[in-house]
Length: 305
Image 1 (spheres, rainbow, N blue to C red):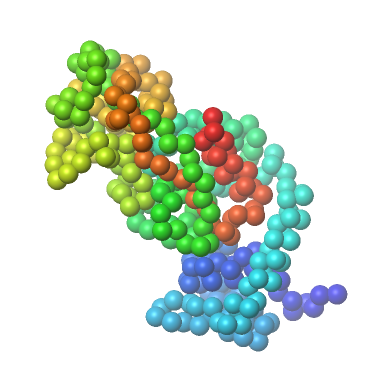
Image 2 (tube, rainbow, N blue to C red):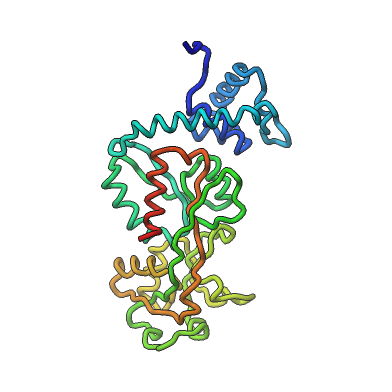
């Protein structure tokens, strides 16, 4: 029989592992809806239970003790067993999770056109939120503030998992009576004759917009007239002017569905190919969660379709 003083449950173990990954008790507590004082009390319970501080402060960061390093494999095994048991009882139809993700605005429209109907059909009690992150999205992901990040799989910590998404091809998005639709082969020189819209979140280190590598050098932003992180604003601006937008084909198809006077123009092969490569990224703390597995698989299936 377990002791009444035994504090173990899977969420608490996940809480300890999150502290080890983030080095911050406050952020780790937020993931489990714990106030800073409640998170501190919970950590104190485990310190008392194990007879070890588990974490020590160094330069403002909580670092695991050698005791915790030795304990961690057992905690991870405990968490994996609990996840397996949960998976057997997992009922998608009655799942009430609130999922959060962040991605570049260029990917969001076509991705959501696929993912949201699937969620409504398969897990109608779940809700979804797109979160805009200005700085350090990987840190936000690893702290548990979001469930998924669609970005560049560069410089990831060991506790991160990722899967590449389909690259897609570049195309030109313009209004239907734009002068460029009459050109046989559109070159970079042709594109620079017109002011363009840049669809960007400002997180250049984490994802790249479709017009990267087409326009390069010191003057690459010279023809940018309007910069926004909202696809709907970009598409509306293009539909009522001679502005142009370098887009992925999937996103452009969504735009044309919503704005009837927009059209897609092919680019020459060397401009069309090699659109920036993106990945879906998630933390190890979510890796075995059956609800999270289902959620991220929706994005992976979008990649394959």
